[in-house]
View 1 (cartoon, rainbow, N blue to C red):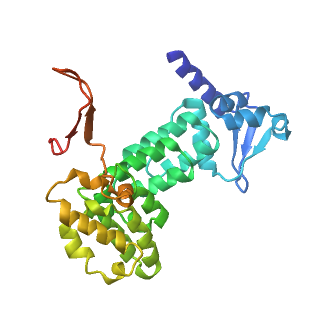
View 2: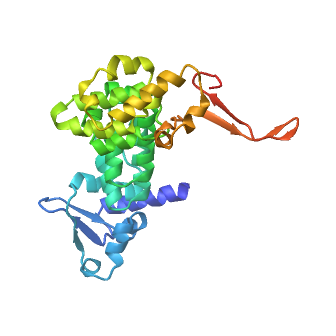
Length: 306
């Protein structure tokens, strides 16, 4: 390990002194040029390895022109190639991520993901999720998705980014079976908050979003206070389903009738309850009489058996 560090230091020193460099990176409209060793850049980046070995014009040229990146950002990439170290900050993390992704510097890309994960919060989780989707980075996308779904009510309450979601993005979120909400009231309230941010433009999209609300799990109080007296909902294509759900809640919620799930085939597709990640399931095992096919659940948050 110490030998590797010493080698990297020596290589960095050679580059700083312009010794044995065999390529010069040029950025259009920038006076400053950056001397590098092809072998060092190729060792950390598939992009540069291909660039320097593809047999095309760049392979034979000493000067390589690279577009779409600043000199400062290229300097950071080069420093990382030589030292495996870079100072990632809130100000440069996303730009470094973009550069590492573009030039396939996988070690730096992972460090950017780790940094962004440490920075994720209620106010930026949606923006980071969109950012990860744009670059099709599954690891960062999954991290952000897990945060959004685990903190959904707080995100709705405090995040300005929530109101900027597209209808398809919000529908994708509220359709998640693991969306962590106190009750389905939270989902309905989120949809209405989003729609009322721009009521004229989002009126029809609101009805589309309501298809993602699992109305049989909305509380009777929410129905009475916020839904049943809304004329716009009564004129909407989803009213029949909402009204059916209200009847379902009113008739069977107090009796805890488990057979209600099989009453009609039409209800079955949106009867499914959400199961947040804090619910633990235990299936099967052994009992005194032998193997059992029982199913038990435990809520880690309330510390109770649902």
